[in-house]
Length: 405
Image (cartoon, rainbow, N blue to C red):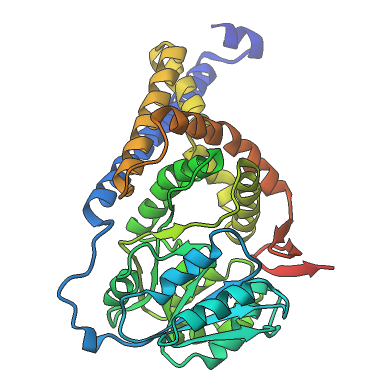
């Protein structure tokens, strides 16, 4: 009744206000139920569909694949990562490595591997070709122009082919009605807090939303490891058109849908294994990704925070307190515990080899990620510049890219 006294509301106004407010809080409760459903969907999908290797494959019927690898600089894991591509168990493929500068140290790594595996069809392209402002596509353009197969794999330098049949699995999913196969980003076992932090994120929050968005039929593609038809790139306008954008992977996905073809998720994740990682670099990566997403998909600004444990938990704690007069501290602690357990179950289901960190280490990394994600998100939303590899770029609405000199 205090509300009526303060605002001089009539009885009808007061009850109308209370009804609308109650419905709003109820909506928040529905939100938390939906998010928990997404948790269970992701865990179930991981158990049923991830890490399914191809069987009974007729190797003679497999088409050729051109694998494009953009390289800039060297880290401690680069040679091991690149060597796994030379060891792929696939009958017909070519490896096309690209470096921008003549003196890039990655060049020596590639040349040594080419000497060690002379039976593999591998070539090195130096210098790139500027077709737009996207440095990755500029780097890859000469290799793309020289590629000989209709199926194009674009794979980042930090990806390790943990399974020799990864390419076989992706090609087997490339049925006539499919135009693009992409892989769930995940991480190899590495040591240190930064590595555990990345495992907690890619095995939890990111993996959950990535799988669920694709299960629900929406287009969500990352460019870490993709297999795409050349015809789809043509529909997108070629590298010349895609190079206008910072998120070329997103627009490749949209071009696939425009072509009338389907997008499929590989059952074998894209295993990230860069040698340079830390909590600081992880934070910069999250800020950069938010800047890119908010420019390409503006709805991210409004919807994304409510998918996170902290914001969702606080809003729904407020809601259930208003509706049911439940103890807010107890409710929030139960919410936090349940979210933590479900994230760990998903990570454990996605992990094939034993985890190289304790549950306590995971809990610390998970808590750090959950507590800093809103800060990284807000920083990313207010920025319009990103540092990417060796350049700084201005991102405009629509995902357009402008180099800052």
